[in-house]
Amino acid sequence: MNAFIAENLAQVRAHIQAACQTAGRDPASVSLLAVSKTWGPEAVRQAHAAGQRAFGENYIQEGVDKILALKDLPLQWHCIGPIQSNKTRLVAEHFDWVHSLDRLKIAQRLSEQRPENLPALQVCIQVNVDGGSTKSGVSPHELPALAQAVAALPRLQLRGLMTIPEPAETPELMRAVHRQAKALLDALNQQGMALDTLSMGMSADLDAAIAEGSTMVRVGTAIFGKR
Ligand SMILES: *Cc1c(COP(=O)(O)O)cnc(C)c1O
Image 1 (cartoon, rainbow, N blue to C red):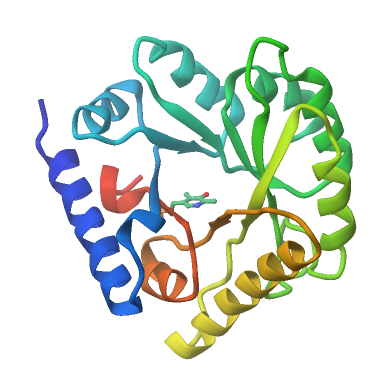
Image 2 (tube, rainbow, N blue to C red):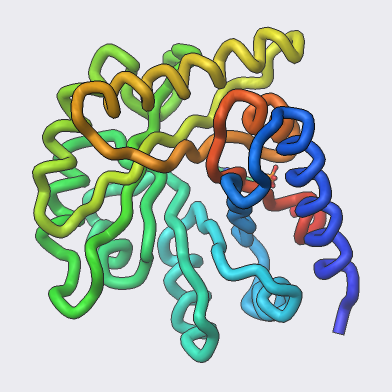
C-alpha cells in the first residue's frame, strides 16, 4: 500500500488547521472534502484508511461506479459537477450531497427521484459570485428565489452555498470574492433560513476561503496527486 495519500492528507489537514488558527477559527468548523475524480476505488480506500470519510465526484457515472465498488465502507459522497436532466436519477439514488445545484428543474427532479428509504439529499446552491459569463452557478441576483424554491422541496435539505471563483490577481481580491459568498449566505439566514454550509476553497485559495468563512474545502490534487 502506498503511504503517500496518508501523508498528503496529513499535510492538507495541517494546512487547514494553520489557516483556521490564522483566521481565529475553530478547526472543527472546516471540513475537508477529498475530491477523488479520475482516481479509482483503491485510492479512495487508502484515503479512508487514513481517516477520510467525505469524497467529491464531478462526473456522475464515474462517481456512481465508485460508490457501488466501495459499498462496504461508510463513506459520504458529494456530487460537485454539472448535472444534466438525464443524470438526476443516478444522483438521487446514490449520492448523499449535491453542491452544484443551479436550476430549479434539476432540484425538482432530484427531490422526486430521491428514494424514500434514504435521508433527504443534502444540497448547496452553486453561486457564480465573480460573474464569469460562461460558468455554471446562479447569479447572486437569482439566488434568493431559487433558494426559497429549493428549500420547499420535500426530499431535499438546503444546506448552503458553493462557489468556484476564478483565481484572482491578488490575495485581497480573492478574499473579496469569498467575502461576497459569505455575505450571500448570511443574507439568506437573515431572511429566516438556517444554512450552515459554505463549500468554498480549493488548493489554490484555501487560506483566503477559510479566512472568509468557508465551512468545507474541496481538495483533490494535493491529496491524490496530479490527474
Ligand atoms: C476538481 C475540483 C476540485 C479539486 O481541485 P484540485 O485542483 O484537484 O484540488 C474542487 N472543486 C471542484 C468543483 C472540482 O471540480
